Amino acid sequence: MKQLIFNSSNLKETQTFAKKIASCLNKGDIVFFSGPIGAGKTIMVKEIAKFFGVKDKITSASFSLMKKYFGTKADLYHIDLFRLEEGEMFNLGFEEMLEEETSLILAEWPAAAADFFPKNRLEIEIVLQKEDKRKIILKANTLAYQKMLEKLAKKIKR
Image (tube, rainbow, N blue to C red; front, side, top):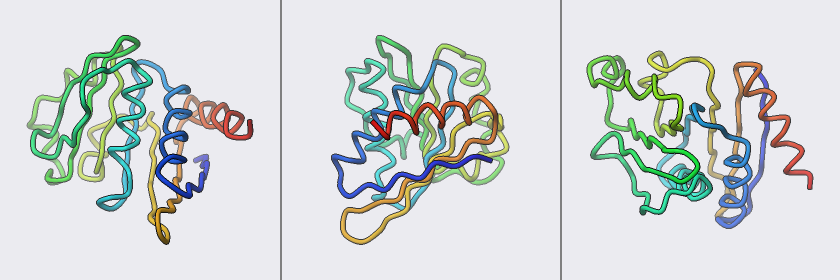
């Protein structure tokens, strides 16, 4: 497993980093976001959605579990699995979403559904630090996402 760590000092840096992540994503990609409440998961989803041309206001999907947004570059599924128990994904009809290769899947609180999704995904963990600082840890389990992290690392150095 390959990792890339980014340290963010404030909200603006987190948003800028999310835009760089978005520029490396493609249709069909799956991204997991984990971290405590208030870490910035939805903030990152909003920036990725903007990059892909979503004009709608992105809000937390906590109460609906999933929202689909239509963008000019790609459609986006925003999933919030905070209230989900392990194994419940198999009973909710999300299989069609996985078959749709023209959309991005962005999932917050993915732990309960990790076995439902393919291993070919990007995992982002946001760790709160003092004040507004965050450590953002990106993990790639497969070669495709490892290459994406290499591309992202080059963009960060610029």
